[in-house]
Length: 280
Image (cartoon, rainbow, N blue to C red; front, side):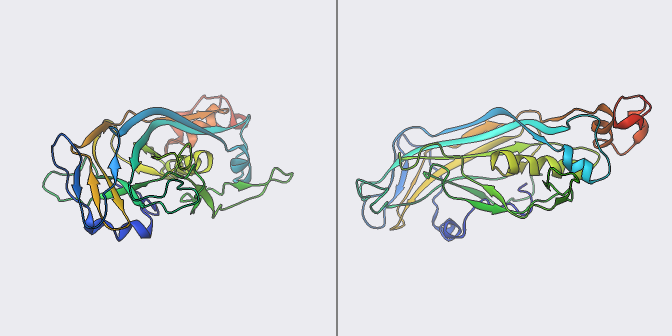
């Protein structure tokens, strides 16, 4: 499912969803012409799940909570980073899209969330891809209750971070290649606040949102390109990608790392750290 508070599709692109054509298995991308020339998907789109990891220094977060770690506390995860790379051109665009009129209105990767009951019809979700070099900024409010906007002190103080800045993670602006990167993970910890903390870490460190799915889930993405006249080009076949196992990362204080993962403190007995609270 798509987690709450995840803005995956800007409002301008939402209005385009009723126009999007279904995929067809042809040798060439399916096109719907309304006026002018439709967009051209110039090469096979790249859709893949890359092994990735994210790490955040949350030492001050736990000092502020009254649980100072014995060392530098690093919290994060190993996860699948979904990467989309779609080269698109449009004959009706000006030669210089940076200064002229780009006729491409939206390039999207659309999917039905995997891992759902087979007898339940799921709504499609669409991810908008960008050719902006990561210049567009999208504000995202932290979802966890651990305050992560901290001063170095002393004394240390932390407050909720209301304005994570997310980007598309597109590499080069106006090169005709539309890109997007985001996280896909399955992190079922006993303490849900820790799961949310890791999601906030991803937003903070990489400017990415998260799709929460079961490990080993396979997505089938449909790629569409839409121009300003409403012409649509759809890549002829779905593009499948399978996510990997997610692993929680916590380093710097064994006792505290255990306590923030498990609801039962007896599991952590004998571990070093947190000034002897676990008896280690």
